Image (cartoon, rainbow, N blue to C red; front, side, top):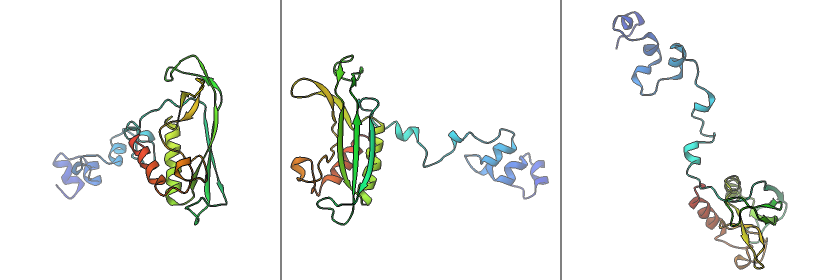
Length: 194
């Protein structure tokens, strides 16, 4: 390729391509788009790794968690059994009573809401799992509507395990449980949340 813009024009190469090097790349640089009069790309087309990637999110399964639930969390200045080196993340889930949608067992029938607390250690892994649980909540994967033992429909945790007690061990959905963080991370991964 010629080294000066004048020689480039004589050879039929656009000056903007020579200057920006876009003819050597499969993807034209944004500067070439400006010079060709097309203007900058919309922000929705830029490659931002922090943005919601539709291709990535399309791999996440959608659940049937009722609409309108809330997920809030706070830090408690105490440790969980088995995690004495850090504080505790307490997560509060709230769902009001409602009417079942077409994604539930009996559309049009009522269900009882719930208030549920879950716990994580406030360490690197626990904080990462909190972020993954937030994604799962947004994709309606953490709760579902099911009949209880008396046949009444209510909001219940779905198949992603939550530690709803801060003690008592794994048999009672509590701590200590040395395998819980790995187990919940794997359960989330199966649903497409990583």
